[in-house]
Length: 149
Image (cartoon, rainbow, N blue to C red; front, side, top):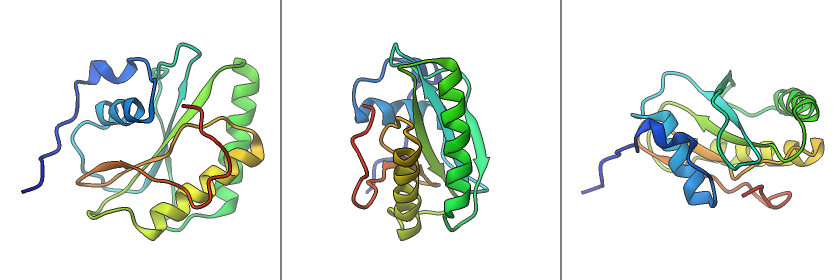
């Protein structure tokens, strides 16, 4: 029997992030109970104190990743990071309806996001995916660079 999903309390979402496991727990706290009606790319800024800033951004995305969407996103993120200063990073989570393990599309999204972040010099954390039953790390194919955690 699989372990039921129990998110941590929401108030733990802004605890400091010192590892990839910590980041997964912060995402679990933010997402709460799982179940999604649409595919969204969610992102949040992580401050110099290694805590999530309190604004979660949701961006509807298509089923199939496209370079244009990724370039538009990272162009905007680069401009924001240039304004708010150094030592701020970005955490990304792809949420979608459905069950099962990491799909080929999940991996393609993570790969395209990783490469886009490298191209625009946007420091990102490891990428996570949430569906209706789990929230997991998605390793991009041939990661373009080391993550911010």
